[in-house]
Image (cartoon, rainbow, N blue to C red; front, top):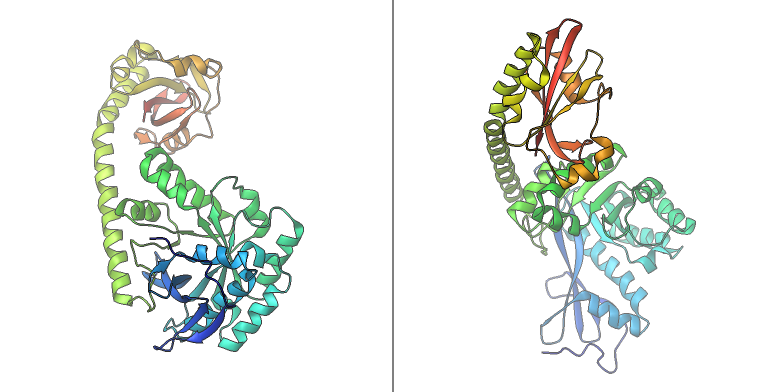
Length: 415
């Protein structure tokens, strides 16, 4: 059924009260109300904020997407007024909301952001409702405002007024870390598309913790929204994000989420993550166990004077063994890489300039540092990108006595 949004005789938007006392906006035949979706702190196990959004219905009670109502308002020249009333609507309803010290997250329209008097008007509305700017998180679209100094100045003035700033949609389209460094938001909201890709491609899921760590080191808290499944929620927790939001945890509602419900959901998710990590580590241990015995045996043979090629023959026969190499006590490679007899790949041909490593210095690599720190013990790195063929691998290493001091034997394992 098609809903006629451009009904004749459309009146300007106005604020009023519903039968239950909540504030609503009437725009023509449409009724617009506030709903609030909880934002949870993973560590605190509770809602620390609520993201405000609009819910619109026509005269027959049928749902109308709010963006369509705003599109109609733009055609009639009412968009800025409707946006202003929408914010007043959220602020007024949130003030009556039993939220204690929770933040209110507000999405800002790019047009409102470029209005130099926007901040003053918002502060005036806050004073009228009794809320302080410190309880309001203004979410700025990552692509809004371009690189104009004016945009940065407006965001800066809002921050000085006491508002928290969240940079929304980070990671979409042409996102750049420079944007974070320039605007210095308090919170970065990762784009939903990043999560969707990570849920489908495990190698992208491995990258996300590094992105979150980079943002943390840059001084930002990190939020991941739009979570709908167990898989997505577990990815978010394992990435070490600070805040989560989505239908998986709680849908938008008129009332705050019960603390017990929030804690139980977070505890169940944390338990599932622990189980997942234990199962993964058990599987990795079983996969890597043959390499422990193999590299210990090869290292013992080398210590007895056997040639590395002969000493590592059985080790390189293991599945996924990519290469062995030997380092001296300062991390410099002795001789070239020793490859399995069956080794041949298009990737190796493409990265031929990197294949020969005699004399290379690997002193900064974890496999050398950890082996030298505890000689005689086998160490495994986390998965990382091997420079030899530019693919993921795990390196096992062990330091053993040699005539010239310690040698470190390493084996790369395709991952």
